[in-house]
Image 1 (tube, rainbow, N blue to C red):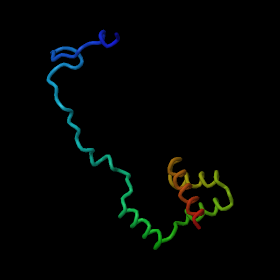
Image 2: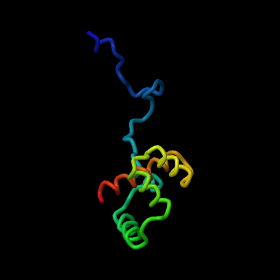
Image 3: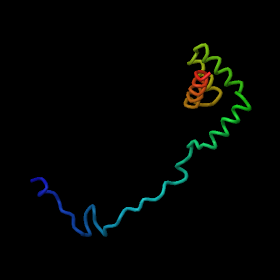
Length: 102
């Protein structure tokens, strides 16, 4: 009963679905969309550099603050050093996960 009342689509030059019927062209995703993606080689190089050079002094202090469970102070410290709340949170989580692995 409902289907008989619904509109039937014709090849008309008016309405929402007007014009020649074509298949939708789906282009490849842009290269700029891959920004921030971690590749295997990049991860390897970063891990190697970290292993050779160790931690920065502010990172060592951050780990000390986390060891004595001063999480809020650690976040404030990381924010001051890195210049933003989100960056500070990310660094604090990174250091906390390193301490758990040790």
